[in-house]
Image 1: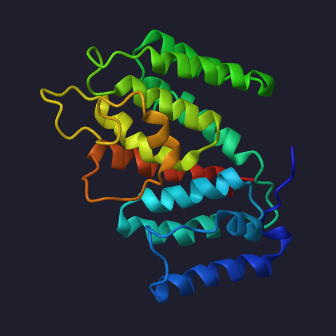
Image 2 (image 1 turned 90 degrees about the horizontal axis):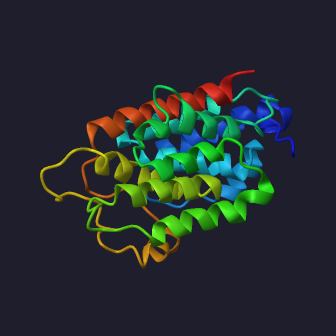
Image 3 (image 1 turned 180 degrees about the vertical axis):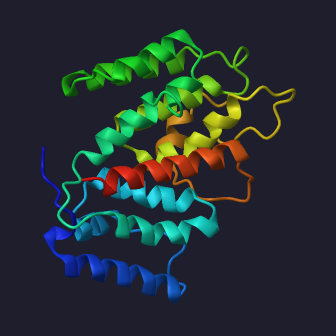
Length: 238
């Protein structure tokens, strides 16, 4: 595994990154709708690309009043010289298996739950076969018995975690939370995937997801705050 030493062990670089972010915010040049140059950002603070993408995605999906605070606090939280290579693997483990907030607690379908559990021991050479298992389950989904698409969201989230497509993960987490709730009607389900299993890959990989005018649930926003707090904790710990 490559080592990613935060800020190239240079305290002045950390201060420069924080100051640069503060100036962007002050000048109104930072927007939740804009596309960051994630590779340049990852190189600047010396973080794995997947972690840089996760940081960007959290910024894009947080409520506006919290997002700009996050843009500064995550930079401040990372110690100069910290090896950031293990942050994403540890975060992924927490994301799925945490006894209180892990996604495993959202699952009630046996085959999908077993796939999530298998991820805990997944080896690199098993990834293609694992993805095939996910795709097979997707192809067998029945919209008549899952009209809210909850199983589809569960599988998309799992696939995005395995492939480290974390922006798509962040975009679909609110769908997962909303679809697992008991509802008397199917209104307010996410429009991207309603009755559209055949073309889900085009939707999933083909389009960037941005904040829109839809109201995120209080439950999801609470979870998003826990998620950002956990990532801060992992980035800041020695």
